[in-house]
Length: 168
Figure 1 (cartoon, rainbow, N blue to C red):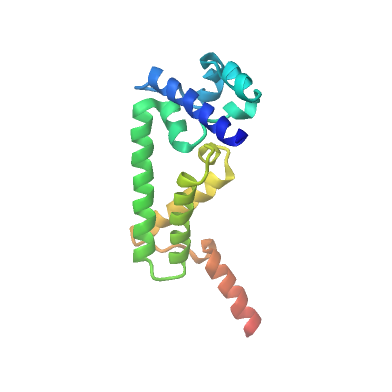
Figure 2 (cartoon, one colour):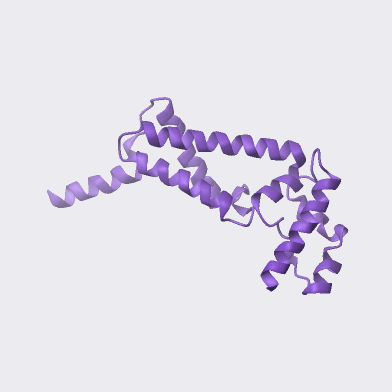
């Protein structure tokens, strides 16, 4: 029950912040800096207890994009997400080699991050997960342009060559 209460209070704060800054939002990671101005201390203290972790993010990726970037941020985030999905899906459909599974996994991974990941940390510049996702997207773009992906960068081909050497 405490987890649900915490999430509902965070959603309430994010909603108030979004309504007040509907066009451009409060800026990158601004939610954590302005949540106290929106009564986070009183809201959480009256129902639970206050913790900085409760206001580290807006609670999910869509609320984070809404509070940080407003309507403009939501439109940009939506466009970026649609293009990523389309690129990965097209690459998975049009690739016939072992990279097909990597692109499909990237598609499922991105979907799970959007639906299941309730923090915005995967989009932060210092996030290792973000780097890996951008690499998969880069390879997907290469396959879309019909450019060969060098074998030295293919995880599957590296494993395959090791297996071939050990069987010989």
